Image (cartoon, rainbow, N blue to C red; front, top):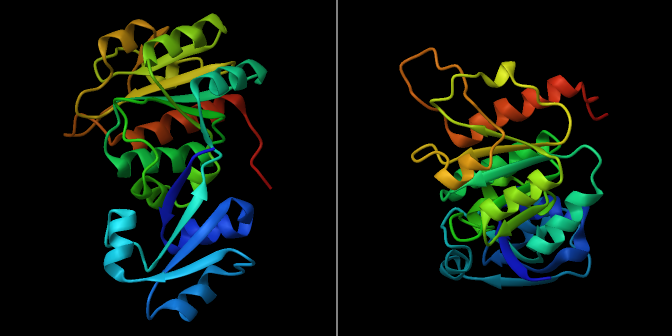
Length: 246
């Protein structure tokens, strides 16, 4: 498994609590060591390295690192082959497919929403999606460390595979006449959303079994992709009558 960097008190602290073996090294800003270390909880035998604020910014790509970062084993990022194998083992999957979401904050928010809604797998195109960057992990607030994600070389090809597995592929499109609330979302399901600026690409649309929209009753024409994902995923959850976690 590859390793990557996450940052922020919540993201690092959550992983230390839930899966400490995946944390290879913790980086703390000099001058904040003991106080920041106490807020992270039990570190155990994890290597802790103090560094300058500028070094943390270079490592994470942001100055909003809260004085803490970590290098972790990325166990939730699947190869395309691993994702295909995983899908074949699922009885009644819910899969979120993202087409061209390049803003790391939007992608991170989608991962957080997917984790909350019990999504089995998030799939995105490797070349047209932002990937699992430190900013994505920070916005996801720990979800990027537990939500299975596959970045695939050819999104249309993967959608074809899902169709061959008898998974209903529902795409969200602003111009669609059918409403998400009138769409059958029970059974094996893949929800496909594009970036709010460009929407779904042509090949992505062609692989969808149905296109649906969200009722827009005000002046705005579209919603942020993570907001739209939340609405669609929880509508699927409502229709499935899944029990809330205890």
